Image (cartoon, rainbow, N blue to C red; front, top):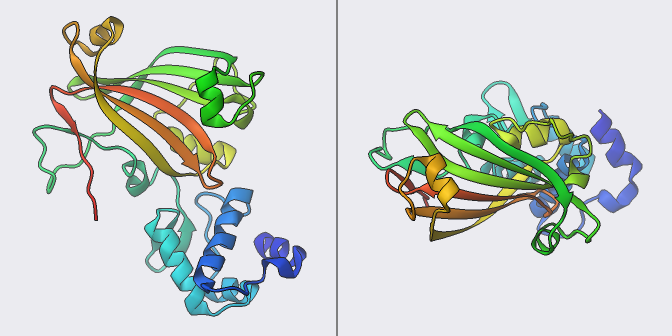
Length: 255
């Protein structure tokens, strides 16, 4: 396999020596995802094959893969093997979506993933805040998108997405982000969103946003400031969402 060959060519530095072994094994496998050796949707080699490649026991590899599965990076399919997770899998799709209708029953209702309508798109030099978030220079460019997102009852949130242009080199002024952007990032650019950092606060909606959401002027909305972080710990997306709070709430389950 290509992945095995790449490991062998890198020499003994990739052999696992320090404990805990399963953490080292996991780190090597995550690096293969980052490097694009293992792509979203790809069937992984057997645990025995990976263990032989890394010079550890099969149990160590299984524990590392269990950890990656719990994180949502891998998906185990009964009787078929273990695959690199794809962002369109429902478990991945809703892992970062927390808005729920007020009248839903958390034990029975499934969330509705909102559809998107384009409002605006532009490219420009990174602002000071964008430079700090993406670790850019003042000369670097970013893409900015505005979208209105709706559920079956109508508009529920306005959002602005900012992407560093160097991470998406073939974007053009006519590029349109699909509804599920994380799947787009992974399948087209090999960028796997591993986690998101969010800050929430109550704010007053600007007049234009109130109109788009069908709310009265000065209506309260929930602001979600989200930074999407890739496997290499780089922020690859900054998103500000203004969400109506009259029939939706933000739900999170802590374990």
